[in-house]
Length: 320
Ligand code: DGY
Image (cartoon, rainbow, N blue to C red; front, side, top):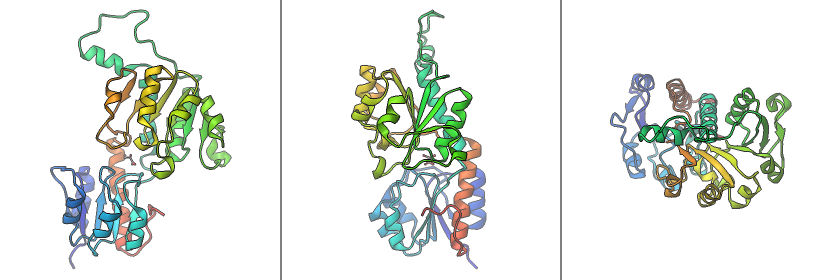
């Protein structure tokens, strides 16, 4: 009995590729070449399953043009804004993602962004690396302490709740805004703001942890930034599409936002050049889930989903 064909768009951690090669007729990507929509269509000829990544857009046109053999698309990410779910459903293709396993790693990265931005660690690192450090000085690179500050989390899902857990260890006062209030056992004492105006007014530090997509596109715009306390710190480990870049760049220049830490960008891997010109923003290359443990767990969960669909079962990680 021939093995089902699995097309994997990018190079994956070795244990995940070993499992894929054991269980599937796997089309791997040893060179890790980025795949265009045309490549995806060509390389999925005869494939039963596609394991894709957030760097690829599987829009409606691409999904409609996929070969009839494709039964499941598993994305190596919790976010699925790069996959047109409606088009997949219309084609009878099941979509899976990788929730839960990356929540801790992504929340740690969000906290890293908050600390790096607030404590001006990016500027300090650039100064030392460039050989410009003249030694300790009483007024050098003074940032702002995060302990005792009010942290606002926009998007209190699994990752947002992990950010809250870590922030409590820094004695931050946690507030959140989302479409619905959490039950008390998940809220863990955080203050819910149904109204984004009252929410933004308390955010000395704002962490963006909501999903991408149309509902959150450019959520952080000039109007909302103006409602933040002056000198706020902003961290985005969610999706670049949540931010109106021109508005944030203007606020970083005016001081309305003192510091920002960004891991994600609208139109990745392109980064708005306005950010690169500013010292008070730290820029990371979408590292949220990038730990050895997490990336392996994501790969295994994606394969679990594919296994389930091809065996006629409902996967636990089905995108509904
Ligand atoms: C995700 O999973 O959606 C991240 O952005 C990629 O790690």
